Length: 347
Image 1 (cartoon, rainbow, N blue to C red):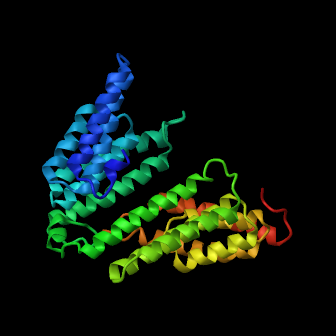
Image 2 (tube, helix red, strand yellow):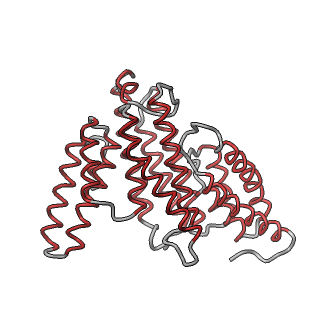
Image 3 (cartoon, rainbow, N blue to C red):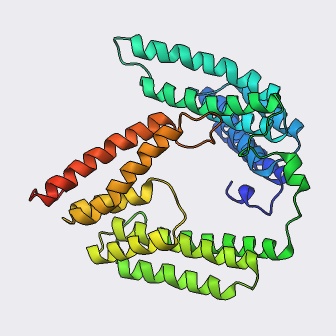
């Protein structure tokens, strides 16, 4: 399946791989009714994801969506995610009505489930904030489709028309992309040497990551495409070394050095890396180092919460997710402050 998602393979090749896999597994499950029902559903999900990635003609996207609808959704989370993906495909080919006809009734269903989750005395399938988050996320996509229908330009929407008008990818860019793909495979191979067992030293793992980086940087050619590729490789390496330092419980100075390098060259804007570093600070009784990260992070989340109220904002964290993270950060800050006042290190 991973091979089917490689950039060098077409949608048709990837879809053929998935259909072959479907036939193989269906032949093995016999009369198992659940497997006979769920295997085609999983394959349909993968194919719609492949559509989103490979961008075949819209008719192919519509066919993949109709196949999912015919098979049925095994879970509300799947229905939300796949509806979001299909709506993105509709926006890409500037077919807003076809996306809206899916999103509008789904959001109405979610609103009903939200009311049920708020009003029930028994435990609902999901808490209210689960539905609130999906309603907000799908609402961003709905608002963009409605603006597209009105003929407005939504800056963050990608369209086939714009992509086809853009200059074609150069041979240098193709070579740089292929080099980065090779680099990422080598990087994943290093992670597999310690990811499950955690039985290697941080120094050895970090040395392996740096060796991989040096090897591929040396293979990079000249020109803007390769310069960008090298920056990405350095960023991926910094992120991998920070994760290794925190997960392998390296000496705190090694964690601090890894964090400083991540801040200098890292490109990942998710919560994962700051969160793991701050918790490492707490465990190592280094509250000032943790607070130096948490305090501006809290301010950043508060600014994002304010921006989440703006119309036609690009997709990202929902206000529900931001509020949850803010609550967690405030708790972390309280622990770090208590730690600085003489409390025991966290375990």
